[in-house]
Each structure stands twice: as C-alpha cells, then as structure tokens.
Image (cartoon, rainbow, N blue to C red; front, side, top):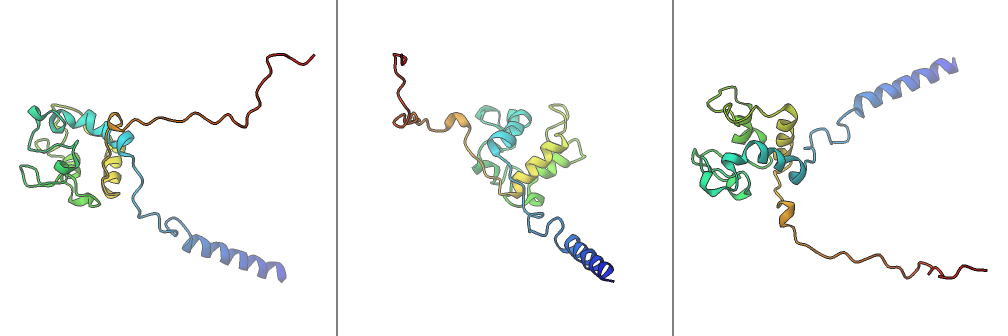
Length: 162
C-alpha cells in the first residue's frame, strides 16, 4: 500500500512539473533572443542589402539606408518604416523579405537569392529585441591594454643552483 501511494505522489508531482514548469514557465519563451548586430545582422545586411541601401550616398534607393539607425527607423520615400524596433510585424523590412510578390521582395530576384530561414529569423529576432545598432568594429576607439603585472612572479636565476 505504501509503495502504490508513494508512486502515485511521485507521478502526480512529475505531471504537475511537466504541466506548470515546462518550456516557457520561467518567462523566457516569449522574450526575444539575443542577436548581435556586429557579428550576425550587419553581415547579412552588408551582403544582401547595402548595395542599394548602404553607405554609398550615390547609390541609395528609395531614400533608405539600412546602415544608419536614423534612416532605417524613419519613413522611406514610400512612407513605410523599414525597421520598427521591437515590432516585427510593423517593420516593412520583414514584410519585403517575406513577400512572395517578386516586384516587392527584397532583395530583388535579379540581385540576390532570398534570405535563408536562419538569416530571416536572425533579423526578426534582432528587430524584436529592439533593433540595437552598433558601430562597425573599425570605428571602435583604440585603447591600450596594460601588460599583466609581473610583481608576484618569481624571477628566474640566470645561474642554475649547483
């Protein structure tokens, strides 16, 4: 009798844990995934978008530059906003990436292939997390690193003990 009662308690506890402490129970399921702009998003934009929407002022199409947060989050010539931080479904960039209409899809079919599912998901996650931009690594300030202190290290003797 004791074993069957004990087994039922274990089973009930396990069931409770599965139902109420499963995926998302800690509140992280609906939180956006952390995506690094410099290493994950910028390379996608650079390879797929910057030819028409990048730093070359003489070749910016539709009044949209995706390399500058000020431009990417402001209305383009069409009036649409490419990136609405935190709002994936309001971001024109995602609508254009996912469009099946070849006249609207970005990048255009004549320029490049569709983004992969992983690339699209990274951009979605980045926008969902707030679309934080960071400067290209080459614009980071240079600072010197101090060498490790050698005060506590023993000084080797040039003469071995005899």
